Amino acid sequence: MQENPELEREKVKTHLCANCGANMVFDPKIGKLACPYCASSAEIVSDPSAIVERDFYSFLRPENQRLQPMAVDAMQVSCGSCGATIVFIPPESARQCDFCGAKIVAQPKSSDPLVAPESVLPFSITNKQAIENLKQWTSSRWFAPSKLKTLAEHDRADSIYLPYWTFDADSNTDFTGQRGDDYQETEHYTDSQGKQQSRSVTKTSWSYAAGSTSRHFDDVPIPATTSVLPKYLERLNWDFTELVSYEPAYLSGHRAQVYQVPLEAGFERFRQIADSVIRGDVNREIGGDRQQIDSMTTDFSNITFKHLLVPVYAGAYKFKGKVYQIVVNGKTGEIQGERPYSWVKISMLVLAILFVLMTVVLILGR
Ligand SMILES: [Zn+2]
Ligand SMILES: [Zn+2]
Image (tube, rainbow, N blue to C red; front, side):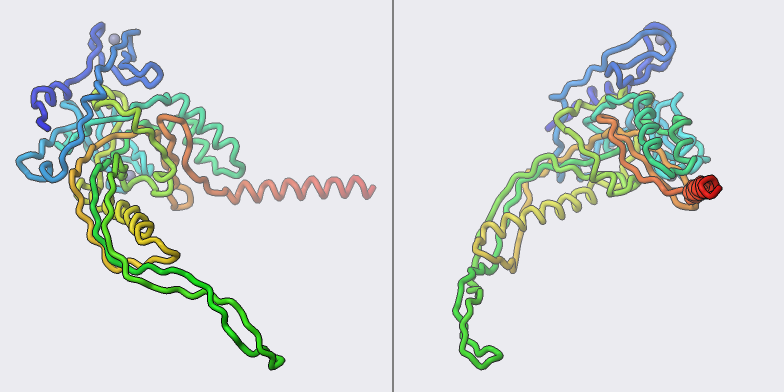
């Protein structure tokens, strides 16, 4: 697959308003670039057929690693507290970390070249909707500390794209093992009264098994972020059929996190996931009632990968020394998060109930 350098350069241009020259931002409501100052909007030309799967091993060769920044004018800043690196196009900025809530004091610098994303799931939930969902979510949670409410009330949920890898591969596995077939046998024994009894017991006869099995893996997603809690990442479901080819315009007015899991490490994680799937295949292949795998050798071929960005609104706050994260799915508006209990509020409610009870007792006693 030959990538066109001219096309690559074309992709990293800035997006200015044709009418007033201001920086346009990607507006999830209309799915286009919109000017925050005049009513202008512009279509983002994104071709789904331009989403290419890149060959994994040939990409790893240094001469083939075409690294580039996410946009020519992109800046990046790293959180001194959790280490997340956040990319944005000015005038957008990053003063507070989306993942740990810490103030970012470092000066932004031009963004480093990296494995450029070739596809993106654009936001379809607006910041307003995300905040609205967040407010509903917090108000439906009793005893949530005021800090959580402040997070929602002060619009402290920022739109940020999270990095993912996806892998495709064909696998072929040779295996050896044992197949266990169960059978019933009648066993005779003497019971406590000294009587002869019989019972049926299950036994297993084991036989040698060997063979091979193959499978095609398609678009297995591997999160390239370690900043979002794994339990939230697991519950964020993405429809990869809605992917569009990456254009820097989608970054305009939003932020993106730089991948923390390098490509090779992402592939290792893919192998682990693939391995557990293949284990299931091998067990089915061995058959019988029980299986034991003695050896398993897997060759992966036609390995390709994609780097893509998925949209979330993220916010974090500290409560009693612990960081609490809230993540809103930028496609569906679904919220992942947990909130601490405010014991002050619970105590106050208990006191209020006691006060009411005492008043009732006093009135009734009169
Ligand atoms: Zn304008
Ligand atoms: Zn941080």
